[in-house]
Length: 238
Image (cartoon, rainbow, N blue to C red; front, side, top):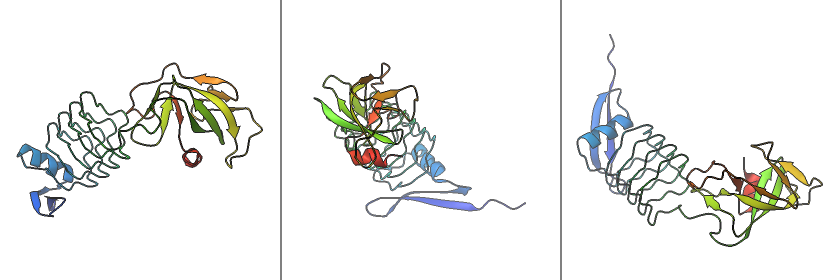
């Protein structure tokens, strides 16, 4: 019977390129290598794990301080209490990850997918990409794509508003100022329907509201009126 090939995987320091941990076994994967490193108490600070597939991994209390996890797949990973201080998580998939009590201080979360991630008790002090994409106070203009048109919205001063780490924003109510064609000209229609809920209608001169608005900013696709601050972003949204 043919044996499975022994595979050696090395984890290197992101700055020096030196090997910080290596693991060899039949059918080895980066996930098993990282898990073995954690079991053995290896120092994974500054580790180069860019693009690593760590879906569903149990990384509880792991020390990944300053690690490069750019574009890593951490979907559903168990990162409760993990030290991710200064970690580079730009573009990482953290969908449904458990980040309770994790230290994300000074981490780079730009363009990271944090949808349905549990961030209760997490330290997000000075984390990059965590600022709101929309104004935190006052009234402002937002733009939304709906039914092949662009809806110009005025978000009132008392509206609840939110955004995750991307440019898409949400609010609980908005006044419909105008319906435009994609090229910016005024549309002949004065009413268009939402692309995601055909019962939700945008009518010029009316205020639309979402009564079950979700205040969890990390749940990007949660209930709310989704819009962009930049009209071009609304036009290009797929």
